Image (cartoon, rainbow, N blue to C red; front, side, top):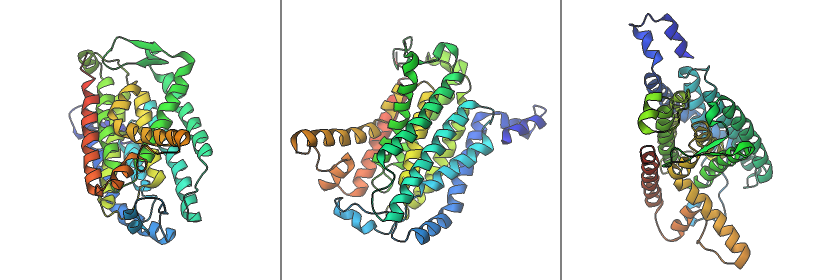
Length: 360
């Protein structure tokens, strides 16, 4: 919204700064960060008062989690509120990709909010039925993928771009929309599965989002795409402002989510953030790279799938408990050990993903 102040610029004054994506991204980061610090404590107090017993703790979970009883959930409201506010203030609102990513974020956030509310009000883990969550998520993703495709350059519409093999485009045709739906819904649910320890999900999400933000900025500049030999998608640079808001809001949330957590992000945050990552990947034509950058989330999701399928087939378990971070809890790793080591893994995978921009 504040971008329109450039209309007051004669090219050599302070208003000219608003033309630059990097300046507005920095401002969005600070706006979201201050939003988190200002509204964090009041929000936690409201959630604690209204939720009473807080997020239900799984009876079959690690014993150390029972000490977290009474901690309120839905802290994702803080992150979503911060990044949407900062994006609306600092991004160009005539950019369709910004609206696609915001729509997905808000839509999945509302799904998560309904699920969290159902769990808290019932005092158990039976929130919104999984099939209903998936159906709504796929609908939101289908709309987002279709709109994104309309604004992609004609040469890239319905095409799947590959990392490293940069001259290769796979024409998925009609199947691009279902593919994009799987990417967005899969990312949302993978982040949701990762959110099981204090601070575990938010830092890898920020790491992945920064990586995708760099990619969005790069593929939105023709000079960068020529140097990196990647496909040019005009307009994606504005997504960097959304990412900056996400990181600022994420840091504000982490201030209160650091062990011992004063609030959990809940499905409100994890589904919204995961959906955002998936939407950015679809918009920037880097769906495959998302699987590398977000490799930690992929492993978490695969651990659940493997556990369920193997148990149904043999009656035995591959992991002591799934998702895999609970497996390491059962093996005796402390919560800070797991969280920090998983952060390190997320950073390594993000760097590998970014390296694909130049590798050929």
